[in-house]
Length: 210
Ligand SMILES: Nc1nc2c(ncn2[C@@H]2O[C@H](COP(=O)(O)OP(=O)(O)OP(=O)(O)O)[C@@H](O)[C@H]2O)c(=O)[nH]1
Image 1 (cartoon, rainbow, N blue to C red):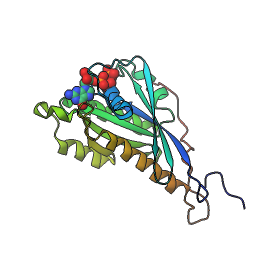
Image 2 (cartoon, rainbow, N blue to C red):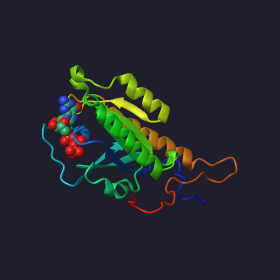
Image 3 (tube, helix red, strand yellow):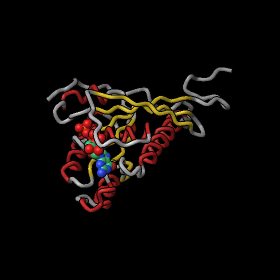
């Protein structure tokens, strides 16, 4: 019998590659989160030169998920590369530093950019408050991060790349959300046609416009 290319056959364990981008102000810990997650290590100094790229494979119950984690340096300076960096992303981590309120404000601006580029169901977005090990210097309460994430429909976690707090958890939550959306998109709709495929993306207007 014939099966559409988007319908996984029973018994077949599909592999899905997903592009995940790290966004956030300088020094919030983007590289450190990626490094902790992929290498399970922490270094005080991790200079990001240009753009680095990590991959992590997750063997989940229904599928294998390959996360391609993209990290760039000095994003404030290179704001104009953002469209290229975002292109084709399936998920984004909006990282701020809980000891620096301004970085949460910056994260809100990144969110606005993402919302211009993507339809809500095209991208999974997580708000990540990093450096919870520095509790004594906290400037952003958990409730504030949580509340903002809730009102905007974002996943939310507070993490520490240093003490390895909730780093695996946030990437796992993203992978689970991506798989759930994948399955929803592939489920036949009541009209017998499959729902809009995830690969279909919105036509983008222009690139790097001021
Ligand atoms: N205490 C603490 N320090 C952290 C944590 N994560 C990162 N840092 C430190 O914060 C500084 C910046 O971390 P990076 O990972 O380089 O930050 P980044 O966001 O990649 O910075 P850019 O590459 O400049 O955009 C480094 O000195 C890290 O050691 C954390 O969870 N806790």
